[in-house]
Image 1 (spheres, rainbow, N blue to C red):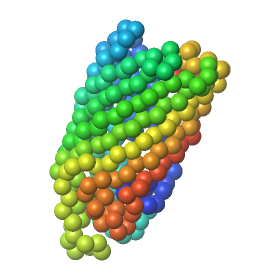
Image 2 (cartoon, helix red, strand yellow):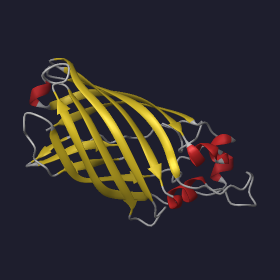
Image 3 (cartoon, helix red, strand yellow):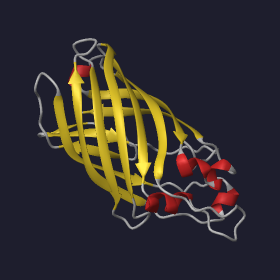
Image 4 (spheres, rainbow, N blue to C red):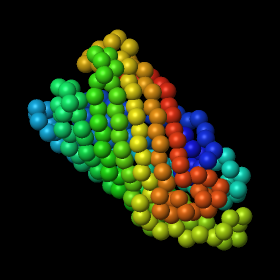
Amino acid sequence: SASYDGSDDYVVSPIPIVQGKIGGVRISPRAGGAALDFVNDDSDGAKISAGVAARLNRNRASQIEDPVVLSYGELDTAFEVGPSVGISLPGLLNPYDSLSFNIETLFDVAGAHDGTLVSPGVTYFTPVSRGAAISLSVSGSYVDDDYADYYYSVPAGGALPAYQADGGWDRVGVNLLTGVDLDGNLANGGLALIAMGGYSRMLGDGKRTPFTSIRGDADQWMGALGIGYTF
């Protein structure tokens, strides 16, 4: 993944993916965190989800490869928490697929950017065999002035031109996740191999900031390989 949001340097780092169900609480993966769904909706039709999402945001908190960007110092790690709601429509093209819509509003509670971001997303999930499935998601994020100022404003007196960032649409992206169950049966959970790839495009002041426009690139790519356990 990119060294920081808007970087054209890439680094290797762990990506946690959490998915499963404990009691009546469903756990779904999020970038850098997870979402908990407290609505135990097992109806045959459209399923409603509502709960809490949380993630760690370590943008520019470590692994800054660009020496000019690093000269502005490392930032604090944000812990973002907030409500998550959505709806899932099953059985669109086959009996086992689903199309899900969700939106999350996250607030930094760790005193880093002290801002807010809103993240809408659409995900299509379908098995491609008894032991393999794919998930294609499109998402975006909208950030407030505090978020944009913390990550994208450039103070005067450094190597880059001074820049004052404001909130707005921050990025839009697409991700494809493929899972292959190691015992050949997706229905019983267990261990699976996971491959994921994604592309996102920085927007607004996240694109215009000198950290991106001069030292980085608005086009962002990521890839991951790993192993997962569904319970």
